[in-house]
Structure formats: structure tokens, C-alpha cells
Image (cartoon, rainbow, N blue to C red; front, side, top):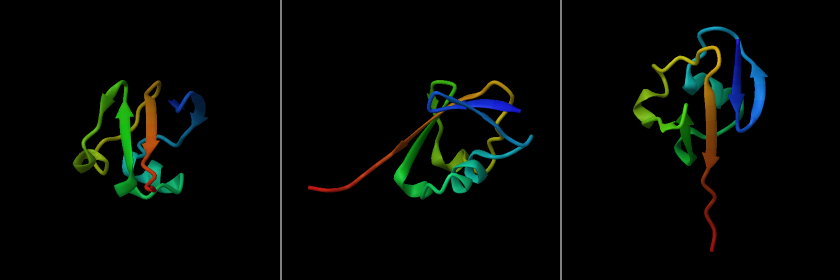
Length: 66
């Protein structure tokens, strides 16, 4: 299936959860925010929310510093 991630179209296997996908990308889940189809997804839903054909995902990574 195809989803758009941060503006790039990617081919993913069917049924992948948001949690699995961000882990595969190498992001630490506690340092990111995910918007799915323009709605911010609560972190508690990452494991149960499955990506579908045509979804648009935006991932923002928080970076600390001073």
C-alpha cells in the first residue's frame, strides 16, 4: 500500500501500525508527534492504529537543546 510520509510517497506492507512504522524508521516514540490525515494522533493509539492506503502521515521529532 502507498502512504505519504512527510511529503514523500512510500510503499508499506498492509496492516502496519503507526507504532511499527515509526520504529522501523528509527524514531524514538517518546520524542515524536504523529499527525495522521491532519489530526494529531494520541500516543496511546500508535500501537492500535493501522495505516491504510492513501493515508497522509506527518512525523515531527522534538530536539532538546539550549
